[in-house]
Amino acid sequence: MASGSNSRDKLEFNGELIEAGSRVDTVIKVGIDPLGRDLEIPCYIFHGKYDGPTLGITSAIHGDELNGVSILHFLIHGNDHIPDNEDDFIDVNKLKGTLILIPIANPESVLLMQRRATDGRDLNRQFPGNSSGNHSQRLAHALFSSIVPKSDFLIDIHTAPGTRVNLPHIRANFDNKDCKFLARAFGTNIVLHSLGSEGTMRREATNSGCPSILLETGSSNSFQIKNVEAGLNGVLNVLKTLKMIEGEIQEPNYRVLVRKSRWIRAPSGGLLHCVINVGELVEKGQLIAHITDPFGNKTNDVFAPCKGLIVSIATIPLIRTGDPLVHLVLIKKTFDRIKEILEENEDCECEEELVNDEEGIPLDDMVFEMSEKTEPK
Ligand SMILES: [Zn+2]
Image (cartoon, rainbow, N blue to C red; front, side, top):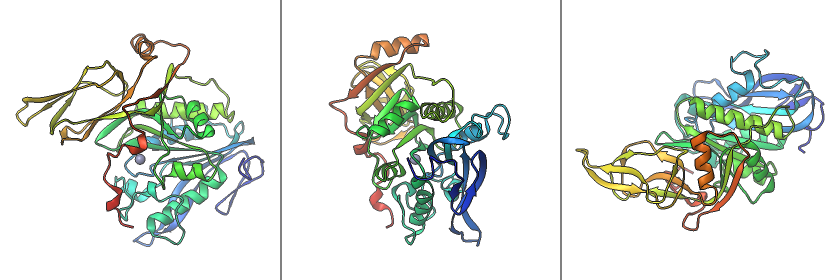
């Protein structure tokens, strides 16, 4: 347990002392912006009345990925967005432990509605950061040093870029038992094994002794209510599993733990007409998409190479040969059971399967984003 987190002493946070049994909004100071204003990261803290673990939650490290902002807003103030009333999810006078919540981790990039930091770097490759380094490294350092040493566990919330949509799913290092525990506690249907790239919040926090998981939910630049609800439900599941709050854990009706999976790539360029959606099951050989020429004539069909479940799809119709179209998780023994569950919308005991797709590759090897080599150092 991190020092200071298991005693109901006041919490020291960046020089401020926070009483047990109180909720405060505060800031993490980063520096000065071009107009001479303080560059600050808003931060909300529930320092519970009773002993318990400290959970840190970050969102919008990528400034265009906003579903996590909404998830944390609901968590902080309930459905009505008004503090201190009966619909709040957290009663700080009953809370066991501490919540450190960062809804907008990268404020300048949020204002610009962009993934990257203002110096062109990816903030989620800069952790743990450097207090005397470049702008992004200092931002990373301010975030990391404020949250991670104080936290026993961490959840980092992301979305797909605007070119794709992701089914809500957790990414975690299965080889770390605490990360796997946290991933299962969150309760998404799909959990993907991945170490995370070097310099990501999740990987570096885990390496420094704070087991961390990442939630992917929906796509960028919007509040998507179903994705937000799934994320909020998962966070509440974690709080209940850690016994920080009371309440019934919402178990998923099935869970697939995935070691390796695959991206189906475009066999040719053209215009993409997907005929499936995220969260759907597909049989081997089932039609996934048509590709057409500019006049709408079909030039290619794309079929599922195995039976499985769709975790992510491309949403931009303009595609080139080799572009990733669909992220597919192989499902074997639970396929028929999941089909029944999805068709009948059943409430039932959680079915679980561990998948290691022999023709798939680990998530960390699926390079489908702009090369980091072009990033300024
Ligand atoms: Zn992201």
